[in-house]
Image 1 (cartoon, rainbow, N blue to C red):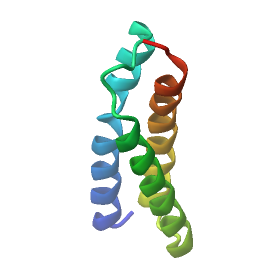
Image 2 (image 1 turned 180 degrees about the vertical axis):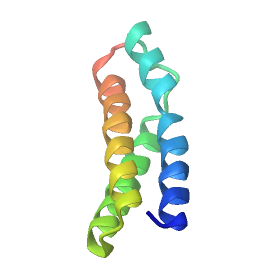
Image 3 (image 1 turned 180 degrees about the horizontal axis):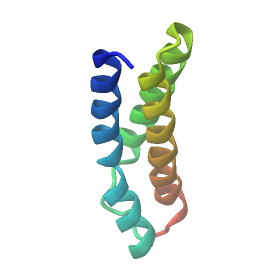
Image 4 (image 1 turned 30 degrees about the horizontal axis):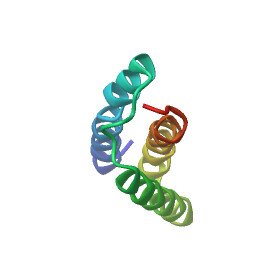
Length: 85
């Protein structure tokens, strides 16, 4: 594996992992009142576009990290739309 691939995977891992605490906190508290709906909608759109881009250029770090980030961000968006607090 080339160095730039390792760096890309490490960077993607860190930025993806950053969403995990928010997803866990939102899930356990059953509250998303302080989460910006607009921000997460725009963010999820951007992540989908990054994922498409990664697929188009066949870049594994972009594909993997954006797929996982999208799942976490969509879960937070789902909580925002579902929880009524």
